[in-house]
Image (tube, rainbow, N blue to C red):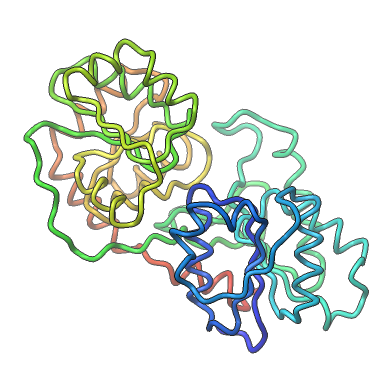
Length: 367
């Protein structure tokens, strides 16, 4: 897996799982082979300190986090530093500028000078699926196909952590790598209050349907809601103004920890709930589903899309129409009514988890 020359890794955004992915890749390299290319906004982020602050790596600043500017600059810097491999672990917005850079031949035509390139697609949704169609969806397959025809270029796609989905419509021949989720060491579970707790985790944005979760919980008197992770402004506004949220908060049934959680805090928060809510039906994998299974926590998810497929195959949760609070409440009743069975299925599914496929796929020479 290791390369005799350095491996340049470029990341232009710090939020979500991005820098945790970068950390795993850097750990797969010896310190002398680590070359990290990031703009100042990433290097100055709390996420950088949390995920990368303790690692020994050469960090080379980029002038911009705009992909059209940063990707050509990153390839030029990697070449100048003599890197043998250039890895883009979040490559969706990099496809077009990378293709343009390579076709223009701005770095010259001597193949030994330009590093081999590996690009990971994290979003491979196509028109006609559960997500609203965009121009980018329609154009991406053709751009990816053109990129893959260039010498010493590999394109992979991120699949779910369980390896359920192995092919993506519109991207023939693009191989999967599993979302890297490493099961935690066993720690004492947080004592339960006797009430059911359902939680949403990570970066809590509008797509996680917090209003629907709050409405579903408000319709019954035995469920508390936990929101653990940095909330985006629209979610904060909802929590401040919504009457159902106010009633839950007044009754001590709404628990919000609106900040970046470190690994131990995230682990404790997820272990503290009976059900993890992943109420978005975008056609993409979810790390939270796998993180929940790693801790034996069943999942309340959508009834369509990629996550629904994972729930069906693994048996680790129940799906609901994510826009319908009544349907979500009914699915929650089903989960809590047969909770132990779903816990067993979640723990069984966790046996497939790990980071080796991700790290080996991106750093290795698979073609």
